[in-house]
Each structure stands twice: as structure tokens, then as C-alpha cells.
Amino acid sequence: MHPRDEVARTLLRLGQTEFDMLRADALPDAPARDWTATLAVTRAQDASVWTLRPLHLGLPAGSSGIQADIRVQAIDGEAAFHAALDAWAHAPVPDEAGEGPEVRLLIGMAPHGPPEIAALWRTSDSWREIDRVFLEGQPGARLWCQGAPPPADDLPPERVARFTSSFGVEAYQRLRRSTAVVIGAGGTGSVAIPMLARAGVGKIVIVDSDLISPSNLERTHASFPEHIETPTLKAALARDHVRCIDPDIEVIAFDGRLPQRAIVEEVAQADVLLGCTDQHTSRLVLSDMARRYLVPAIDCGGLIEGANGLVTGQIIQLVLFRPHDPCPHCRGMVDDMRMRQELMSPEERQALIDAAGDAAPPPEAHEIPQIDTVGYITTVSGTLAAGYAIGWLTGRFDPPFQRMQMNLIADCLDVTDRPQPMDEACSCQDERGLGDAGELPFAIPAHWGTARRL
Image (cartoon, rainbow, N blue to C red; front, side, top):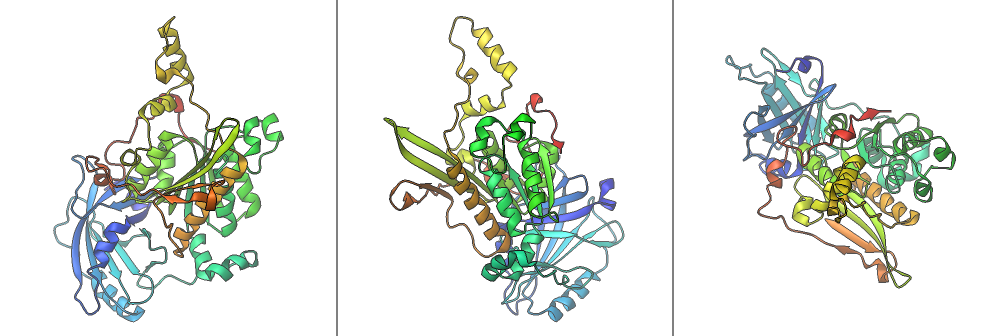
């Protein structure tokens, strides 16, 4: 057992695919069904995060994992759940403990209402409660503590009255308990972040390594010329914007990028992940994080197309990267050449040019082409991404697409869903719930340095 386990919070994550399999056995009046599963272990500074692997898969050799005994039973009403929990929690600790802590998870499925959850893990001589359980697709699940259901949440403030009249008080309370991680605080991120804040998301983690530049002023919300005169990081600007909106929100800003370790630890404890960059590396690692840590993610962006001096397309794209969705490789959304360009330092690029001499330098030495976009396109894209994230976090609606594209100047916006099948040759689905096990999709370049919390 890791020494920090005695003081750290313990978090448990289940993906929707695995939860649906467990729930299928929870039939009214049926006996409890017991499962044995493998959990991957992720260590964060103040928490241990356990992610449920697909029930037919173990962990790679040498990876850290634990065994989980999961009991699923259809239980109607608090009194019945309390009785089942009492009998289950007082079961004796086995005389012969295994190599790692054992986990027990009781899921009560009432015919109406959210799932009721109780979760314990065994130390060498006692049972301890798990501090939080994430069920993908079930934001209303109620975690019992010390044999009692969770206490009532505070009532929302008047400033969100329009939100609660549309979504309900419970939706705001769920947002207040939620954490969103936003990768990128430029054109799309700078609007998605305040939209999440104004709706009431309780914790927002902002990640960006770039300074505000003159060309950003047309697209980046809350940016002004003084942020050019005094060099300002986009992440710091977005953080300060959130604090002005609601000082009670916990907001954390990083000068960094995924998959740097400090940021990965925040993702592993989040409810939703938003990708608001125009980089192939970011899109690839966003999908990887969604699978590894069972965190649903949305990637958003936009661009301008033109020919013969006319604008022919104003495109917005939103892509879902849930744990069970095809990865960017399956979908043909990443280019290996572009990946090498994005991971290369300016010094490495110049060295390739110098080595070529009078010959043409290799393609990866070329500058990355600028994506053409404008402020109202990035604003629409970021707003939509934040809205669908709010739908997930509140449980009020799901995005009705897998990969949605719209053209703002086409008839009826020409909205198209581009669902793409899994590539049978790709191993991405074997990575669900891996946590820290296995390799990252690419090695972090040395010139990235270490993520810095602002």
C-alpha cells in the first residue's frame, strides 16, 4: 500500500459502458449479483484515483492495481438500501488479506431516481469509506457516507434564477459539486471558461502555456491592449476572469500542457474535460485522457475556408471523446507530420534547416500553418462546447452527435454528424481505465519543461 493512502482522499471511477453492464444485473426482486474487477491506481498529490477496467481485462504486467468486489442489487427506497449496506459493511475482514486493498461497491438501483452508491475499501484490519465515486453518465448518483445518504445541498443564489428555472435547482447543485478541466484559454477556451463559471461549476482548472499576443485580441475574451504591454499568460487572464464572475469558484491555472504530470492529476479527478486548442497533439492526448481516467471530453474548434477572394465556409466542429469512443487515430484526425512539427522546439527546427544546407529541408522543419478563424466563430464553438458540458454535468441532456460539423454560411447551417467506426486494428479500447499504466501517446518533449501552477 502506498504511504499516502493513509491520508489521501480515495476516488473511484466507473465508465458508462461498465456501469451499464453492472446495472443490467440489477433487476427488481432479483438477488444481488457479485462481480470481481480490476482497478488501476493513479497517484495524485492529495488523492488516490482508482479506475475500473473493462470487466474482461486485467492490467499490463508490472502495473499497479487492486481487486474490487462489486455487488449490484435493485433496491427501492432509503430504508432498504440502509439495511443492505448495514449487513454488507459489517461483513468480517478476511483472515488472509491479499497483496493490495480490496474494494467493495454496493450499487442500489431503484426503479425511479438516481443510483444509490456505497463504497468501501479494506486496509489490513478494517474497512474505510471511499470519498467520492464518479459514474460516467450518472451525475445524480448519491454516495452514502457513514451509513447515511448525502446531506442536502445549499440553495442556489438569485443570480442563477434563470438557469434554475430552466434546468432545476438540483442541476445547479450538481454543477457546484463538479470539476471541469479546460485545455486552452484562447479563442474557444476564453468563452467556454466563463460560460461554465456563470452556470455555477464549482471548480475550473485552466491550462495554457501561451502569452496573449496582438492577434489574440480579436478572439480572446477579456483581453485588452494592456495585456500585450504587460505580458500576460492566457491561463492567468482566464483565471482572473472567473474570479471576477464568482469569487467562490475554486479556479486553478497552469502554465503548461497535457500530458504534464500536474495537469494529468487534475484530469484524473475531474468530471469533464474540454479541448480548446487547434493542435493535433492536444486532440490525441485529450482522447487518451478520456479513456485512461474515464473522463468524458469534448474537443472544439473552427476555421474559415475561402476561394477566389470569397469566404466559402465558416466551419465549427465539436468531437466527443468519451471513454468508449473511437480515438483520433481511428477517426483519421491526427497527422503524423503535424505531430512532429508540434513537438519540435524552435532550436530543433532550425537545426534541421541548417543541416539541409542548400537542399530543401525536411517537411517537419516547415512552420506549422496558421488556422484561419475569427472571433465570432471561436465564440460560437466555445459556447456550444460549454453548453454540452453543462448538459453532461447536470444530467439534463447528452450531445446528440459523435463528430458534429456545421457551416455558418450554408443553408440551415448544414449541420452534419460524422460518426466513425472503431478501427478493429486499433488497441484504443484496451486502454479504458488504464490510469497511469501503459505508455502515453507521445513522449513529453524536454523543452516543455514542467507545468507551473500560477
